[in-house]
Length: 401
Ligand SMILES: Cc1ncc(COP(=O)(O)O)c(C=O)c1O
Image (cartoon, rainbow, N blue to C red; front, top):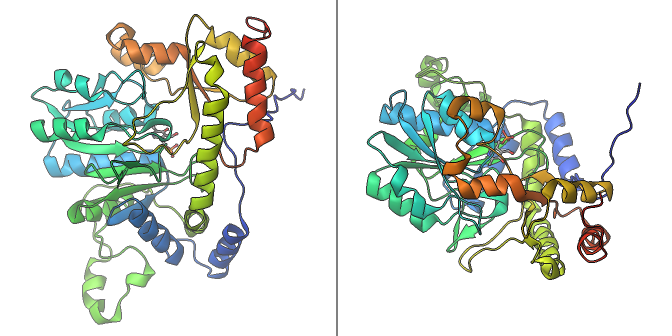
C-alpha cells in the first residue's frame, strides 16, 4: 500500500542547482576524472580563503571532517583512551560521537540560554587533569562566544576543534568561524549552507595538522601523493618511493570531483545566497516579534555575524511544542527539533538521565524547534509561517492542531 506523504510548502532546506553548478559538473564529467582533481583543489583553496584559513581538506561528510580532526590531534598529543573532550550538551550527535569513536570521553557543558551555544562560563568547572580538547559547536549559523572558549583553552592548554557544520561565512569579532581553533569542521550535506549532497571540509592554519588531516582522509597515506597530478616529473623518483607509503592508520573519507564542482559553483555564488538567507531570517525576526511572549526568537550579540542555516525558535510561557509544531506542520511548514543529544536513547544508555545537570539544554530539547529561512524560500512562504503564528496565538487556534 502506498502511504500518503506529508508534503511541505515551507521545507527546512532547499536546493537550486545553478547554471554554473551544472556547467562545472559537466566539465568534471568531461574531464573524465572523479578522484581528487582541479575542482576539489579550487573548492578547497577558495573555501579556506573565505574562512580565514590557509588550508581546507575536503572530506565525504562533516562527520568525517570531525573524525579526522579529533584523530589527528589525538595522534599528535598521544591522548589516551578515556581522556576527556568538552562538548556542548546541545549539539548534533556527530560531535560527541567522534570523540567516543576515538576512545575519548565526552564531558558535556551546558549551553547559553540566549545563543544556544556552549556557555564559556561553564567550561572551567568541567575541566579535569584528563581534559584534552574543547569542541565548540557554532549552532544554527551562529558563532560561539569564542573569546571565552579560547581563553579557557589557553588557560588549560586544551586543543580546540570548532564544529562549524551548521555555520559558514559567519564572523566573530571580524574573524571567520573555523579559523579560531586548531581545526574547523564544516558540512555540505543537504539543507546546510553550501550543499553538495554529502561532503565536508576540515580547515586549519597549522601546516603540520593540514598534512595529517589530508593523510587521515586518505588511508593514512604519505601526503606527498594526493592525486595523479602529483606525479611530478622533476621529483619522480621521490614520489615513486613514497607514493604507496602509509604513515599512520587512516580512513577512506575522500570526496569526488562531482561534489567539488557543485561546491565550487555555490561558493562562487555564495554572496547573493547568503544575503537572501539573512534577509529571510531578518523578515521572520521582525514579523514574529509580536509573538515573543510565546516564543523566544534568535538573539546574537553585536560582535557576532549570524549565517542562519535555519531559524531556531524556543517555546515559552507554557506553549506546548508538540501541539504547536503539529499545527505548523499541518499548515505545510516543516519543523525539526533543535539538535537533541543528551536525551537520545544511545546517550541515555551510555550516560544515564543527565538532564538535571544540563537544565538549559534540557529546556531547549523540550521546547526548541526550527523552521527554514534558506534562500529558496520566497516572501509568500515566509508569510505562511507568520500567518500560522497569528492563527495559533491570536485567533485561538492554540491547542487545536
Ligand atoms: C553540528 C553538526 N555537526 C556535525 C554534523 C555532521 O555533518 P554530516 O551530516 O555532513 O556528517 C552535523 C550535520 O547535520 C551538524 O549539524
